[in-house]
Image (cartoon, rainbow, N blue to C red; front, top):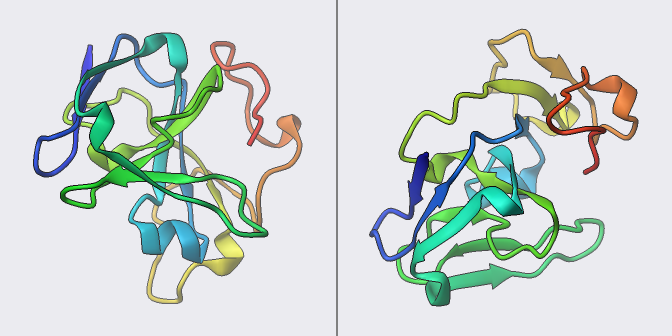
Length: 146
């Protein structure tokens, strides 16, 4: 089991199984919202402990598609914890325990700031990966679908 929470502790959740994948987004929006590294979790493996009512949302504007969730009290970036999808991204920064998975890819590398250096061997994409074949297969996840 992997625990997760916001900075002030008002929001707490747990993952009943490790995330299926970890990635890093370097677009300006993810950087500014404090959730550049994210993990994908299965909805069936995500369980609220407390604070669901404290989740606030920042709605997307074109060309972005994901709404962003954060703690309404302390502002901790949470990713998409209120998603109704079978699998959804949450911000790795709010995990209290080792998620087991490591970064598999970097997206929007063309948008990353010059001061940031990518220091791992994960696959890099100039924008958003669009073909499942571009990311090495992960049997527990299936095809990568942004």
